[in-house]
Amino acid sequence: MNNKKENNTCSLKLYSTLTRRKEYFKPINKNIVKFFVCGPTVYNDAHIGHGRTYISFDMIKRYLEYKGYSVIYMQNVTDIDDKIINRGKEIGKVNDDLSSVCFDLARKYERRYNEDMESLNVKGLNLQMRATDHMDKIINQIERLIEKGYAYETDTGVYFQVNKFKDFAKLSNRKIDELEGHRLQEDKTKKDPRDFALWKKRDSIEYYGEPVWSSPWGKGRPGWHIEDTAITEEYFGEQYDIHGGGLDLIFPHHDAEIAQMEAVSGKKPMVNYWLHTGFLNVDGEKMSKSLGNFITIRDLLKEVSPETFRFFVLSTHYRSPIDFSKDSLHQAGKSLDKIKSYVDDVDEILNSEFEDEDVIEDKIDSLESTSYDVLKSTIVSFFNAMDDDFNTPKAIASLFELISESKSQLKDLDINDILAIKGFLVTVNDILGIIFLDDNGNNGDNEEALLDLIADTRKKLRANKQYDLSDDIRAKLTDLGYEISD
Ligand code: AMP
Image (cartoon, rainbow, N blue to C red; front, side, top):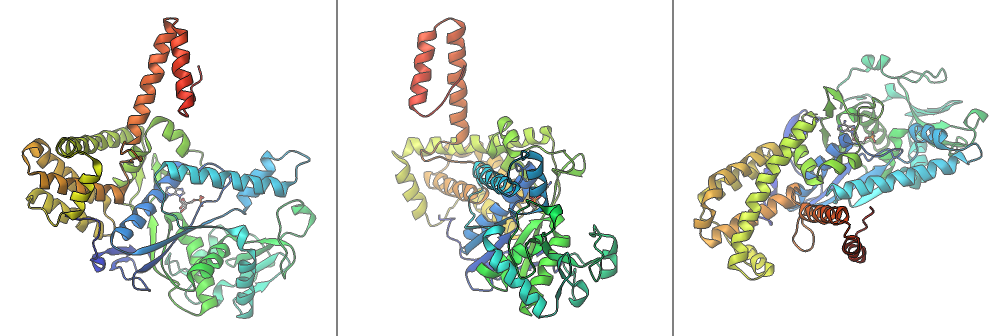
């Protein structure tokens, strides 16, 4: 029974923030899905709130692919921004060139972000586009906005004139008058305090040393919102399928993106489905760098396996808030262990029946269906849940039903049913990515446990003054690419 090649694409429903309801998913271009998610601002290590958002979108991309779509998943990298410049000023030395400090900082944290994503098994990105590599596109889009009468230049920059765009803030559903008090930059040159920056002029002495680019309006740098629409217009065109981000980006960022792109193209909607992830909170407050209540992904992964964190995240619906605590993370680890133990039981039966993995894979691929009712109903409920706006907690619950109903009977089942269960588990893992398998079919936890065991053994040897043997083990581990320091 092959679970991997389902073509029943029209059954998927997803909730769009724009229409505020679940809708059947239909891409603009038949089978191709253009999927854009706002990427990180790279000036610091990513925290687990970022991890929550990007794991959720990774699962969504995986599920769209499972449904048979060819997904082009793109993220931008905000590598020029006030936060990067401020951090550059903090860490730069007196004689350093601030521009180079900011550039190096952004590259360093972009690299570290990508490493973090890799360790979380977030691997599906097809395009990653830096704002600073698209200055000509950004400038060109601003020029067109000015030509069309939606933007104007002042002494301090170029601004989008909010009251020229009739539907402004339709995504957040805010009335234009309500916007008055919202984090508005005090700038007397603007026609209206609600107008937002497309280009920030940075010619004067007070900005000396900051990274700048030449433009028709003098030296300066882009506003935050325009980088995304310049990038998506370049690679996806004026209209595309899905745009995602965390809840906090709905206003003003995504509302501003819609205004810019729809104003420039004259076409609506810019995006058919707007997806937003809920926050990862600590004690009811959003985890954020500015509140200082964050744990970096790197720090968390010193304590728990990436599979556990991934499972913890996917145990909550992507739109709902998650309350982070070590206790709930620990519980998630225990639940994941139950799944892994079930996978081990299934593998044990298959390994005793068939000689090698390839034979098992071939047999799974050639299975047409299963007669095992428990599995049949699990498959139906798992995919119904996933089709219902990617309801991973419900899908995971159906997996646990399968486990509780079949674990004790596995040995009595027909081998074809065991193969069918294995096929389903592989598909579940392809979609959720909760059991990472290396090329040898081992999951990372085993390797970690083995290394811990070796490290402990060496400690004991050293405590018994058996230094030769302990050094020998260390040398052999070094040959194998593992470094151990005493
Ligand atoms: P930033 O680099 O701060 O722009 O954030 C990158 C992405 O992570 C955005 O989509 C944010 O909405 C998302 N994000 C930031 N903090 C959290 C959080 N605590 N929970 C969930 N998503 C978050």
